[in-house]
Length: 417
Ligand SMILES: *Cc1c(COP(=O)(O)O)cnc(C)c1O
Ligand SMILES: [Zn+2]
Image (cartoon, rainbow, N blue to C red):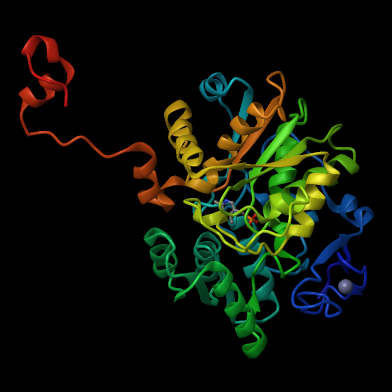
């Protein structure tokens, strides 16, 4: 095994260091899983092998392979993840009253940005000769891991809350995974998955405890840095569940800044649902809230986030902040994104749009600033929420008169349906 560019795994709480070649998930010096590890790189080694060609042409996240914690010899398991478009969004900008661009990460191979991390998980697990891989998920990480496991020939066993949207249970089944629908919440599914990992020694992909998974999520930050190099936005907005994504995105952008590839960094805005607000509460020093998670945005319905420390650090270091949005605002944002720009997001993917609106209202974002919203998941993942956002189809008789009465109510004397 050889990862000369990975220096060490450092505990985010006590600084203790661990050998990156061993499978360690968290620092044993702390209760439970609190001792999250951070991958520390040797940037001199990275800079030597990275071909700095930041022309905005990004075929996949493996353009940044020099930054990724995989063995040089490993055979990459890929479905073409990353390299997603950064769209201008004139209609949405007008509707919101601020200049926004949309990073459309819902267009990854399984419909979610988590493919960036799954590709690395399966590549690493296979290279290490592991044949069973597992994770707990609100739905998308499971579907993603299942797809990449199929691609890489691994046996995938996943734990999801039984109440996940049916599409999110069907997708990993099609990919051939063992889908264990836990009769309980995501938090309970997570605890069970960790216990199983400990008893059976399966490879655990969970981003919050497997220190390498956040590292894949950095590539969305690398891409944003490359795509906005000429005009870095004032804000980059992500929704937050466990908090790994915003932490990874920030780390990626920051690395490119520290290496001098981009002159500025954005401020990070994290968005949570009012019913699942633990990171927001921690960041704003609110009293310990209950570990409840009630929101239509199932992908961020996390009562006890596993990566609060890294997420808050990303907000702090970038001089950013967080806001909360209601379910109604999230569904409104989903419809608005679809109507204005033809971009179909699941609720958690649309939440950043609602977050921008909230941040403008609260004076956090100024109308003359520029904003990138990250759409993290595709709308077909959850059609029930989509119908709640956009309403139902109009039923009509198979008859031209029915059409006429809808579009020419005056001439026919009919009523509008
Ligand atoms: C997982 C997920 C998130 C949240 O990511 P965290 O790393 O848990 O903060 C946001 N949006 C979508 C669509 C997701 O699947
Ligand atoms: Zn420690």
